[in-house]
Image (cartoon, rainbow, N blue to C red; front, side, top):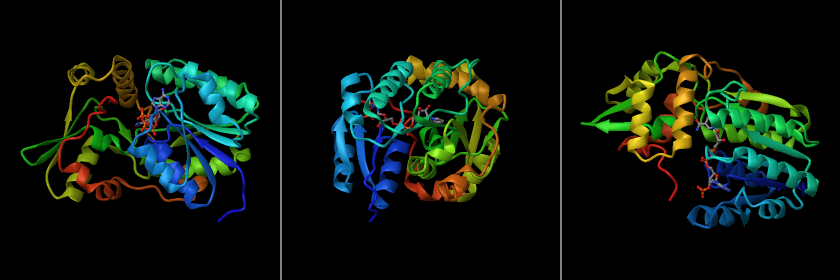
Length: 302
Ligand SMILES: NC(=O)c1ccc[n+]([C@@H]2O[C@H](COP(=O)([O-])OP(=O)(O)OC[C@H]3O[C@@H](n4cnc5c(N)ncnc54)[C@H](OP(=O)(O)O)[C@@H]3O)[C@@H](O)[C@H]2O)c1
């Protein structure tokens, strides 16, 4: 148990990177406040693990301000929903009022001024907004998460399919749990990362033919990459009822992906998080039951 009495706020606490970060901080004996969107089984399990749970919406300035009271460092993680700039503005103002020292900001590798995706351009603007505050600020720019492999996974006649518009583009999938090691490390030691833009990659860069081959070898049955057009991808998302903002984002980042924006590898997870990130084989083995049936296709929240 640490004697450190700092309090860390984790937003997006029931989501992929937030929940992993809370788990790591609590296991290391740190005080954690989890900002959840709603009370449910996920929030109860955070409370049972030892987090102080507060319910707030990013778009409730007073709620966010209350969540930030007494906090030393905060993880800001807003989903791909409309309203990122308002949420970041509220968060930055409330954190400044509360005397918070540092923020770790979840952005993405496609965050650019000229991005075609509204969400990616808003991530870039949110980074710039946080840079203008007095908060010690680090921006995380991950490539596509390894969880994509479960979200877009289809099973037909006992064989696996990845029907995606990524052409011959490449990336090194990174598991959310591996990113949590970086988030926790930067929350605990923010000074060296102030104003840093940290791109996060998994250990091995692959195209989707390579990914399908690797998955087939691990799962023991055929897996196919079916390249489709961006238009077909957008229609498939619309048929599944995904929100327009997400469709606009994913259609545009698919083009970015083809153009190499998501490519590359680096050792930020090892260097900063002191942790070896999972390969695609290791991710598939660790999540083996997810590949028995078709994935959730980013099912909209209830
Ligand atoms: N997936 C990728 O490949 C990828 C790649 C690069 C960057 N990113 C970035 O990763 C971020 C998402 O991180 P993640 O995957 O860890 O999160 P996530 O699993 O999508 O979870 C989002 C969390 O935010 C909560 N939430 C939603 N709306 C809220 C609101 N209005 N107020 C308060 N909380 C709210 C959700 O709670 P409920 O579920 O209860 O609504 C959930 O806990 C995005 O910023 C995205 O740009 C993702």
